[in-house]
Amino acid sequence: MEHSRFYYHVSLILSISGLVFPVMVGSIGINYGQIANNLPTPDNVIPLVKSIGATKVKLYDADPRVLKAFANTGVEFIVGLGNEYLSKMRDPDKAQAWVKANVQAYLPATKITCITIGNEILTLNDTSLTDNLLPAMQGIQTALVNLGLDKQVSVTTAHSLAVLDVSFPPSAGSFRKDLVGSITPILNFHAKTNSPFLINAYPFFAFKSNPKQVSLDFVLFQPNQGVVDPKSNFHYDNMLFAQIDAVYSALASLGYSKLPVHISETGWPSKGDEDEVGATLENAKKYNGNLFKTICQRKGTPMRPNTDLNIYVFALFNENMKPGPTSERNYGLFKPDGSPAYLLGINGTDAISTNSTPTTAATTTTTPAPRSPESSSTGYLSISAAVKVMFWTSWWCFYFRFFCCCFVYLTWESVVVCGMI
Image (tube, rainbow, N blue to C red; front, side, top):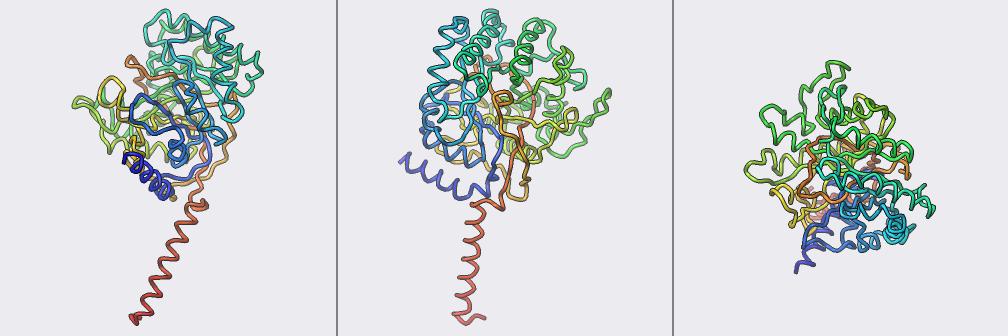
């Protein structure tokens, strides 16, 4: 019964996906977490990923079932090496064995383009993990070089926005002083390998912690007066863009102004506990719906107006076994049975065709290892690479319009035959 219900929902979603979601061809990513006991099999996840126009998927591990299922689909993958494996990657043999088993084994059928090492390590206050992070990144990078894969697969790590000491005004963005010694060598690694700097960003947390002073419209991309950076005079109409530029400023302050910034996680929960202000279905619909629309506009930040923004939405599914508050189990765009958690309200009139450049190992958006209960993301970052949305020229639209024309024609014929006209 459960399986038949799932297939019904998937069929329904695919049949109306041109109305619920734009048909996209481009760089929009989705986080595929699996901390649940009721999720569909990876084979059944493929149509859901395609129904939202996602061409990139981020895993928090290197699940062989998923990587095999998505072979020859053209979907790009970021795989994750969990926090618990960092110390082992100091050993060159173990690092190479991991890459062979979890990356090389699936290439080229499955398009693995990036590996994330750990998740939010620097803000976990774990000295051992911090000490092992860069060596693990270097170990995996060396393994890729030895295997001839370094040109197609990049290495990075994802950070919480809590690595920032100052985030407003954006022009004053800076890293925490106690983390500068740890983060600077990592930035140097990125510069040498041409890999992106990743941030997990959640405007929801900023609003939840201070709902009386943080404007809900500002964090949800709704019409609002916005704020002006007194130093740069740039105007910001959403929190995400302000935080992205704060990260750019922090990078520039350490001499790394040219590093690309990608958003490895951002999203909004559709349900929360009583004290989780703002965690509602309506707000989730507005945040993610407006985020998708912003992506379609291919709109850069005030500080980087011509730079594509890369984003991985969190998350594909509601995950019923995630620890923590209720919100942690309700970030999904989909329920486990394949039905939408809510409709994003995007249609063809929002579509804007853009010309995005295929992501290479050097520019691939990447993302972090599993979100842990200690996750310290309090952020509010930003958006994704260009997305080509071609609704009215899509096949779905063709079939829909064909159906409508047939329906109108048959209705007209019936009226004429019955002598009503």
